[in-house]
Each structure stands twice: as C-alpha cells, then as structure tokens.
Image (cartoon, rainbow, N blue to C red; front, side, top):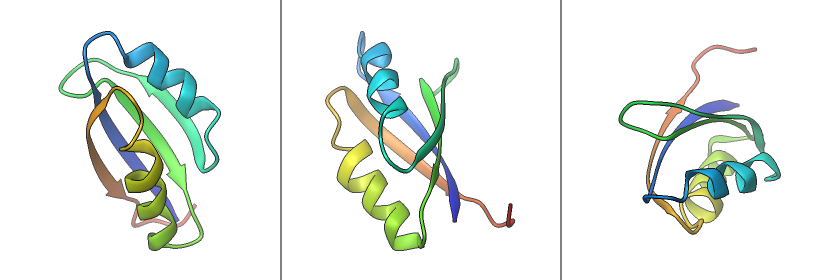
Length: 77
C-alpha cells in the first residue's frame, strides 16, 4: 500500500525533519514544499495498519513535527 503524508513542522525544523525522513524505513520519497504544509512524504507498507504505525508511531512523533495529514492511494502501482 502507498500513502501520501503531508507534514507541518514547527518553525526552523523542516530541514531536520527532511533529513530524518530520508533515512526512515517505509518512506520512499520526501520533498520540501510550499503552502499549508512543509513536507510531502510518500510512504509504503504491507497493510493499512503498517502505514498507520509508521505515521502515528514514527513520523508524527518526530521532534519538530506539529501536524500530519495522510492520504492513502486507491490505485495499485
């Protein structure tokens, strides 16, 4: 399964969060963006539960991450 995670960081923490995400298991792509969110990450897992664990147990708990919004892909790739 694949999902897109939109991440809002606290002021001055985007660069650190980007670096941490680039080395995190389950994160396939990560980009800094402009707009309401600071980072968009593409994550993958074997199940919806795996993606949920990655987002809530690792990404959302990172220092500097203030908010996440997750969109699960509905198309197989």
